Image (cartoon, rainbow over all chains, first blue to last red; front, side, top):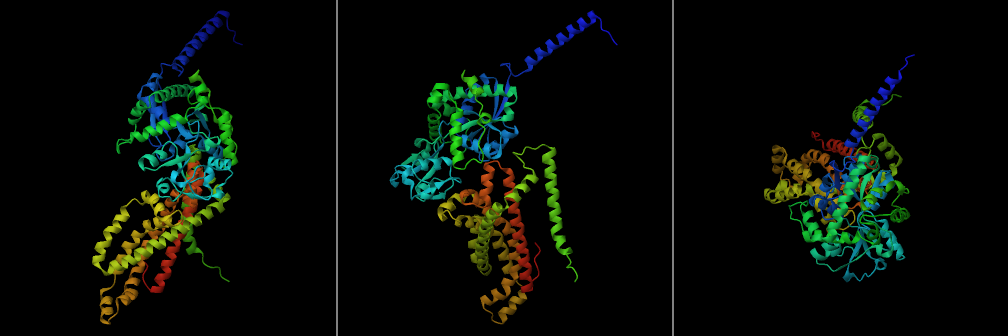
Length: 346
Length: 261
């Protein structure tokens, strides 16, 4: 059998140790952990360009150079009306997108889609129920016997809100009204479901209506708004964790910038809005102001913007389960990832 | 007793079935070998599995869509045929009506669906109206051509026997128009299905295959989306076949040649 002399073996060990050291140095140099490395990331807003806070945070971070400060290049895209963001974040063609928390939970529970929420904007839901003040409706308890609109699906939070007033949808005439607030103005329905940051302004400022808006959260129903979402697969890669932390650091900074100076945030946002037709910046400001209010509460003031807890999502999941929006329970350990946000706020 | 000759029927049924089967197998292989994400393309096997297990749901929603579609087809075709009968008799009416008909044809009807809902209410009416608007134009144009495509010698004969306008219409123009009407119905019957489905997208809470597709697409249940499309395809094939059979029946009764389509 071949016998290696001691000196040859020592020399071989030295060479191996040298090669290992060089390899280790190269690995460190090439890894994404070096903050000087420019990383790239793709973001797709879940709708058309407008001043929703999760979109504004990205526009401001780009326009004010917060992404650049993080050595992060972000490819900003919009799903517009296609809904493509829901699939593309799962196929890996988009790294991060936006989804309402209830929709994320619903798709995850009903199809197994491996969505993971990494930052929560809306500390309360985006939906409200508008009535004309002249209708005499002073609380959801007065919905009984009325014509009440819904948009495609009667939301679980609506059932829960009615339940808080001892009502069910059987007590009223539910009508699928689509997405046209004119039906409230024309009094074809007496209650119209609205996106809080958008349609109340359209109804009151553009259409000159005196309205009141009821929210399920005011009746103690747990509701949540829009989250930033990635896929489980995305989080399996350490380089992606680094990207995500840079992205969240920049967008948290942009959130704080928008909160301190909403007008400047709208100026940044305007650069991303379509020029034709000319955007209604007063309306955009309304959207942003509403969402800034709804994105902050005691929890975020104590822990930092975008914060969320598993208890919040548990409460929402329970409501969705109770009213049949979820076919299965959701594994919230897997559906929520707060480590990166914690790192940002540390 | 001799068995009936099934070859003619098989020659109708087998080619499309084989083509569909080959297409489904190709997609299945593409999805499996190419490891295509289920979030952008479901496997045909899972679509069929879902279609079979929830057939009752797809059938129920499909019948609702078919009712809307047939309502729109009947309304659009009847209105277009009556208008065409008038236009065939009067060039002034033709000049007055055709520009409006073309204007309605080129209008993106989809953009007006929310308005139709406001005008006509939240029931089946706006959906039938949309399906009718999408289907009327091919019938109108073909019917005008058909009503005018009469043999001049026959027309002269009817005049020589002092036939009334109604008699000329009933016994000369209408039979002449039948092949044209059926040719247009073959186009319109599938258009009416598209109209019904699109209208159902906008009134998703009221059911129908369009609503089901909208809802399942939002939930990323693509196997169910494609299963609904499969039911839609079956309805489309059934209705198209029914038009062809009706054409043969009418052609036989009126002793008219079947128009090439």
